[in-house]
Amino acid sequence: MRLGHASSLYPVTDILARDLDAADPLARFRDRFVIEDELIYLDGNSLGRLPLSTRERLHRAIGEWGTDLIRGWDRWITLSREVGDVLATGVLDATPGEVVLSDSTSVNLYKLAAAACAARPGRRVIVTDDDNFPTDRYILQGLVEARGMELRVLKTDIDLGVSAEAVREALDPDVALVSLSHVAYRSGAVADLPAITAAAHQAGALALWDLSHSAGAVRVPLRSAGADLAVGCTYKHLNGGPGAPAFLYVRADLQAELRQPIWGWFGQRDQFDMGVEYDPVESIDRFQVGTPPVLGAYAALEGARLTAEAGIDAVAAKGAALGAYAIELCDTWLAPYGVVVASPRADARRGAHVTLRHPRAWQLSQALRAAGVIPDFRTPDRLRLGFGALYTRFVDVYAGLARLRDILTADSHLAFPERHARVT
Ligand SMILES: *Cc1c(COP(=O)(O)O)cnc(C)c1O
Image (cartoon, rainbow, N blue to C red):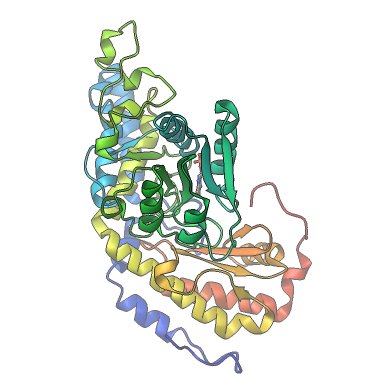
């Protein structure tokens, strides 16, 4: 896609963007969301928009609480599995029964990492990388401390992401687990999940993937890679709503073998027999802990259904195309102002967000908000633009980057504070 030349700043019109929207097979999905604003929302990778069906389903669920009371649990009890199956078949390239909704991503990471280490007794190392998402690094730090293990932390280029070669070099017979993010939260770089999983297996280790920025954004080849374990959020690209419960995946043949560390009654065989000893079921349910958040689970269900309906291949293709368009506009308009693309340029190496580097990224992010464009700021000097394949239009990318160009031209970002806010 060539749009113009960097030498002249205004040769580009939004005609191409409008053509791309007209040809977009997912364009009709935008009407399935609550959009009552003029915002150019480029932060769906932090919190996705609200689907219409979710608003309606939550109203209904609250009504059912009022009328059904405890009897509602006849249906609610299987909700986590129902959402898991929609995710497995429509989003994650897994098999029904391999995914369940449960807890938060942080807690699920702890559960599965601990289960993996227990399944590799005698091995005392977990491998991760220094650009992994903070909660992942902290959870693993706490786990190795509690178990007297060691965390082997790969140094990773924050724009290119972790490479299979670097992981291979870190593997030896001491490694119990490799725990990495599939799509890097900052740059959007995609790790080679099949190659790294195969390398871990060759070394006798298990691999645990954080899919928080992948689920509902890119194809996740769990089945073809023979992936062991994964966790991820539903409130980002899956549009499950603030604090919606997370999911976890355990390959079918590993389920009975792995024992997770939080022994709750939702993992118990014949739960309502209230047995004396913990005796977990053999299915994915053994990775559940306590009473699920039903309202959040309904929201996650509607979000997952919408992505499944659109089809993950179409969703991934649209995300890649929006990103390629943003990169093209950045090269054309913003490079003269010192803005550098800090995400992989090849579509296959990039998730559904694009990160730009500029020394005044924090001030630019505030100026954009004031101009009706919502991006994310990420340390140290990155502006992150997330694309929701089901509702972001090419004209939104065009207008968002045009406003960034105008801010840079007028230097209007210099009027905003240099100090960071609490939530970025
Ligand atoms: C967003 C995100 C999380 C968030 O975890 P929570 O437990 O939901 O706070 C974890 N890991 C990655 C990679 C993320 O992008």
